[in-house]
Length: 181
Image 1 (cartoon, rainbow, N blue to C red):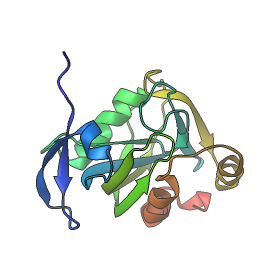
Image 2: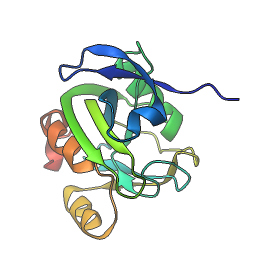
Image 3: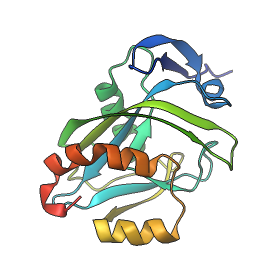
């Protein structure tokens, strides 16, 4: 029997209010919990996207930002973000900086689950070639802003992608100013 993954529940100000099992936190109506989203860029300013593995119970097979997830209760979001980049992508960022926070609620019609998150945003640089964990990531792609727009118009993306991208833009510009994000 596996130990359930616990998430940190928070209020609208990001103050911890308790914990909940991961799946129950995502079941309707959704419980506001701490999360993180990472945007990593190569030296030419291209954004590293991932397509979530088809075996994921939530939002399988859709494109999304470089990495996202949930800190363990009491784990600093920065530490969790760096840890998950390594676990999912097999690389370590050469730079990782805070890029703000955003709160949102996005139901996923396909699974019936709800993303109700207080999301810590991070932007950084990666120089190593990703080695994705196939249980987490089906494929990766580095994209320019124009390539992202074309891909977003034709392929399915996570419900939260545009919300976190828009909220992180100032932090992204600080890390990859030449790319026009």
